Image (cartoon, rainbow over all chains, first blue to last red; front, side):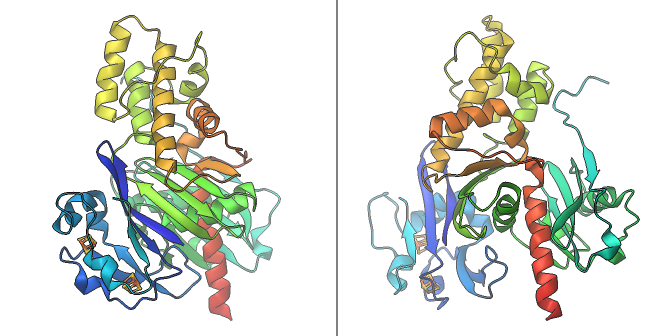
Length: 95
Length: 288
Ligand code: SF4
Ligand code: SF4
C-alpha cells in the first residue's frame, strides 16, 4: 500500500508517501528526522494484518511543508535524512 | 426560528426480512464523523439495521445516540452485539467499541460491499475532509491520500452554501443543472471566500441557479485536482454526504470521464458498514 500523508493547497503539493510493501518496520528513519514527525505504528489501514508501518504523526500532517523546512529550506532537491536512512527505499517526497 | 436550509434528513432503517435471533455473529460499526454519525448492524454480514444522524458537540453521546436509534424497534440490545468497531474522526470517543479502525480502511471495505468488487477508486467526501482511496477486489486499501486542510469539497462547505442561498441542501444538486449554459466555476471553494464571492455574484444579478452551478463546478474541479496524485481507476464511486449531491457528483465524473456505480444504500453509511464488516471478521477471528 502507498500511504500519502500531507496535503495539496494553493502553494503546492506536499505529500510524504510511505510504501508499506517496502517498509520493514526497522525504525531507522525515526531518529534521523530532526523534526520528529515520524513514528512506528500498527498498520491501521489493514486491520486484519498484524504488521507495523511508519506514519507521519497526526499533528504534523497539515503542516508538513513547514515541518520539513528543516531539511529543505529552499525547496531545492536535497538529500533528505529520512530517505537516506531507509535502506528499502520506502519513503518518497512529492516536493 | 429561521429555516435551516442546511439541515438534511436524519433517519433509521431496518431489514424486516432478517430475524436476528437466528444469527450467529452480530456486529456493529459506528462512524462518528465531524458532521454526521452513522451506526450499522450486521447479522452474519447481512445488513440488518442502520441509522444516520447529526454529530452533536459530545462525540461519545453521538455514538450512543446513533447506536440506539439503529437498535430502535429491533428488540436487540447492546448485549446481543458480539463486536463493535468505531471509526471516523471521533472514533476514539466510541465508549463501547471493542476496537477502532481508521475510516480509510472502513470506507474501502464498505464500498466493496455496497458497490461490488469492481470498485477500484473511492472518493469519500465527508463533513470536513476529502479522502481518495484505491483498493483491490477484496476492498483492501492499496493507495490513499486525504485532504483535511480546508473545508472545500466537503459537506460542511455545502451546508454553509445552502444556508447562504436559502436553498434546501437536497435541492442544490438538481437546481445546479437548471441553467442555460454551464457558468465558469467560482474561483474559490474555500468556505469563507466562496461565501463572499457568491454574495457578490448574487448582487451582480446572477440567478441563484447559476451561482449554484458555479459553486458545484468549483467543488468538483477542486476535488478532481486532488485525485490526480492517486490516478483514478474504474469503477469509481463517491461516498459520504456529497455522494448524494448529483450537481457535484456528475461534474466530477464528467471531468474524470470515470465510470461510476450506484448503490441501493445510502452513500453516507460506507464507513460504518465497513467497520461492521471488520467487526464480524474480528469476532470470528477471536472465536477461533
Ligand atoms: S524531510 Fe527531514 S523533517 Fe521531513 S520527514 Fe524527512 S527527515 Fe523529517
Ligand atoms: S527506515 Fe524505511 S523501512 Fe525502516 S521503518 Fe523507516 S520507512 Fe520503514
